[in-house]
Image (cartoon, rainbow, N blue to C red; front, side, top):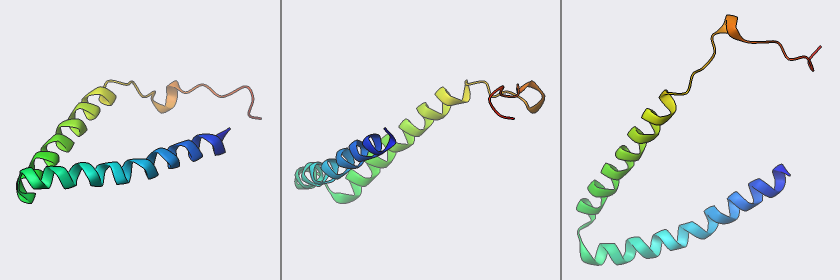
Length: 73
């Protein structure tokens, strides 16, 4: 099962690289390289902040709250 998942993830990653290169090629014809890097960097920071705020709310149990697994002897 894990091999199929990693295979699918690898295929999606391999397909996305030429698509991204094509998109950036068209965008670089419209705006300058420094502006494009600034805009994409801003969006990456925005996405990082959103993910940080989302996953910060997940409660991580303290060491004394952990329950031992009945399957591990």
